[in-house]
Amino acid sequence: MNNSEIYVGLDIGTTSIKAMVCENVKGQLKVIGVGVVSSAGLNRGVIVDIDKTARAISQAVKRAEEKSNIGIKNVIVGLPANYLQMQRVQGSITVASQHQSREITDRDVIDVAQETLTQNIPPEREVLDLVPTEFTVDGFNGIKDPRGMVGVRLEMKGTLYTGPKTIIHNTKKAVRQAGYGIRDFVIAPIATDFNLLNDGEQDFGTVVIDLGGGQTTTSIVHDHQLKYTYVDPEGGQYVTRDISTVLNTSLRNAEHLKLNHGYALSSLADAQAQVDVPVVGKNTPVQFSEAYLAEIIEARLRQIFQRSRQHLKAIHAPKLPGGVVLLGGGAALPGVKELAQQYYSGNIKVNVPNQMGVRHPSYSLVIALTMYESRLTDVDRLVKQTLQQSDIIRRPREEKQQTNQSTAESWNDQQRNQTTNESQSIPGKREQAKKSKKHSFGSRFKSMLNNLFD
Image (cartoon, rainbow, N blue to C red; front, side, top):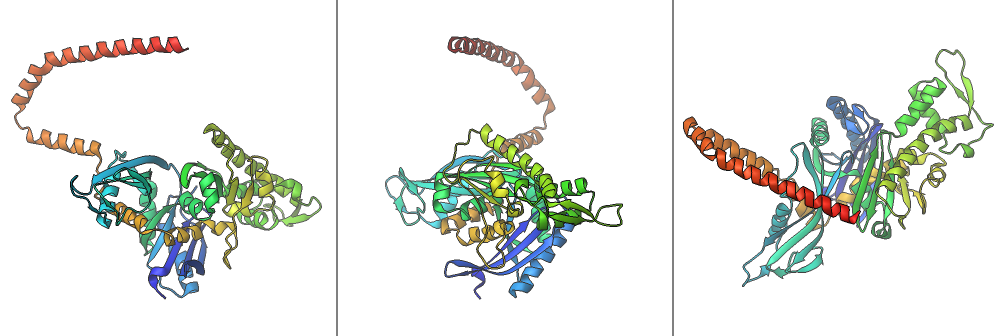
């Protein structure tokens, strides 16, 4: 097999870790191996114990290797949308002199991407992705691939995604400690929204709700761009805990009850069907109806859907033609679609991968990761190549601090410094007084305008 046509997705979830090996056969992805193990060292989608997570990753990937009979070196890692921030950015470069144009090359695309990345990013955050939306050549916009065109000035507009350094660092370290390289980092909503939805759903707008084990992610894609994300700290794991607490049974039993007898909507469950439940402190199982079990599940899911709807209302999200798409392990519960219809408008559907062996909503993200990587254009790869260079992003604030520090270290004459400060003290106070007076007048003027328009 051609290794360049092999893609390995890695979904590091709160309840399970999935590794999937896919082969690109004439433009179509074929699943040839999957490895799934229970998660360890994660809390609400975030790695909190690197060693435990690394061991679980290693087990999942090795199982995928055995199933596919392919040695795996690099993986495509999905990143949660926790504390994700989006920023519209743009940059421009001069390709040639004004009197002589030339063809735009790969190097020019990299250079304009570098210029676009020149942003004042807080030190606690790191760039996750840069998605170009369009290029402009000498005023002609709407260009997706400017290479080969003749021009003098090249501009790029895009969306910059940043996340907490802690999440990114822990994920990198866990994967590398497991013995694998990172082919690419992909934000989970970008992978799912841009690959599991059809062209019309991406264009006219769709709400995607990922009902994961540790958390629930609500995102909006519109005009082929990720517009909004909200991460709820509750997911399927909380449903399991509720069952365990109410029925006084172990978490393992509770998970078994949820998967085999659970309903998201209690009205769909059979009130006459009884389920034997091993109860702590009882020698014999206690019987509960499936309807009662469904009431426990429904209560938690209603809370999750309610909060998601409130956040969508807070940003005045309109009714989108694409409706709502549900995915993740929680979307496999019978009745979840009917329950969601009580909270969201438009068409509601559950995404189920159509590949053999993975026809379950919980595999949506891991297969979307491989689809994302296989569909990258040459321009996308050039931009990602830019992101992988660690010395590209120059932070003006950090540069200024470094400059000030160097100046302070070279300033050895203390007496001269003191004399200079004293000589500038009086003018400095006068300047400060002028600014204060100006600010006072500005405040009064602003207050006056506010009163006029009230």
